[in-house]
Length: 147
Image (cartoon, rainbow, N blue to C red; front, side):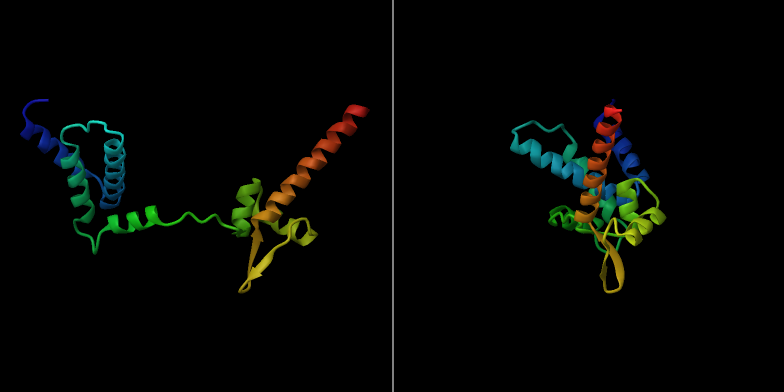
């Protein structure tokens, strides 16, 4: 480990190799960790504040404004659960292709709505479709057991 100035130089080299965006994420993570550790009355390692400051500075260096400001906004924003899905998102949720989703909509198995002309599928429709599939499978299993 050597003397403290040698450790400082190693830390600075590490921080410089990180992109400003990644440095912002690391800085936010370190700040949140320190906050929670202090609330729990835990001792923080020596040098953590200096390391956090180095990442904050790296995130700000060469940027218009600070990417940290945007990260804090995102972290503080209320989490909104999507209620409408695109065909692509619906396909991912069902584990099928987009063409299958379009076919399900055409057949009336799933109902799409339009928001300013853009087709969207309510999450409730996806949930209801999955429930119907599960019910059909359970009926099929019972019919197979009876044979």
